[in-house]
Amino acid sequence: MTDHEGMELAGPIEARRQAIQTCGQMMQEAPEDFWGSRPWNVSVTDSSGLILWEIFMDGVSSSASLIGDKPD
Image (spheres, rainbow, N blue to C red):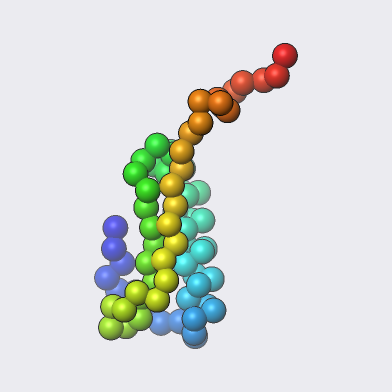
């Protein structure tokens, strides 16, 4: 999904902080959508649409560490 409105932030440090918080919030609100879905990213742009940086995420389950397995 794309945020077409955006927000004004004090500077690049605040923009990075907001991007990281947004990623965490998205994963907390819908963790089942994160695991097993296609990789996704958060792009931070300036007011003209120039991409300043991006955060890429991909949740992949491994068959070697099944949830619920307990050592004998």
